[in-house]
Length: 280
Image 1 (cartoon, helix red, strand yellow):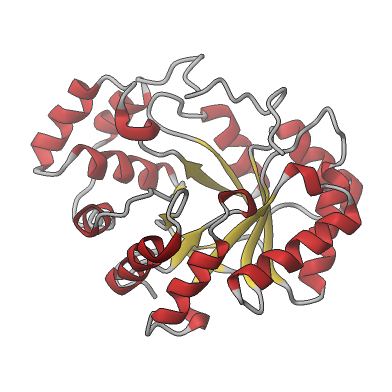
Image 2: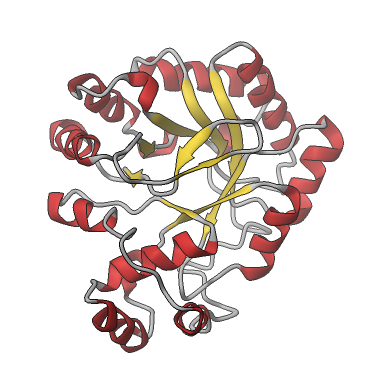
């Protein structure tokens, strides 16, 4: 699957590529064309969300592609306003209708929204939707260890994946350790810090020059060697190709450490701390 993109196996047995395509803001015909091109290049993991309002675009790209549906891994996410059980079930069905798909490979709770205290109810809806064949694998986004522990304690089911903000300026070391202990896959959103604008570029540029690679390629290789699944977004065919051309070199441990040391305690891009931040 996905040409030369390696895969990992989630705790429920689903195999997913270590790099996927983020689709945020890819909409309409242009978006479908960009996503189709990515599939043609070898991308097999596509990341969408109810709140991106582009599930239909992703579905259209899938239909235009010559790649069999069974070879793709398509993700969407439940918005915070639909955490109540019945509303969550309806939202999952609506996500499928929008994309004109029979099932999602991955469906995630987008944010825990802890002040509303409904994320366990939403999780139960995902558990049931998986039993009914609407979803193959269920996970979450932006859940802190205490949120993850509560899901497992109250339902007996662990997420297969937690998609979190993860980039060189915020390396999430403790969160990643917790995931590893619990056998929960780490997926990185905003792997480039939204354009690498906040990172000490010189450190990464020197490493990139040493390997004759681009800065984004080095950052994605860093994610890969951390064991994280990255989902870089790009509409550019050239950048899409560059982003999956990272498996012909390896970062030395000192290079990995140098990049990880760029992390800052306040490194979140928009101060979106899941303990308090909420999205509906």
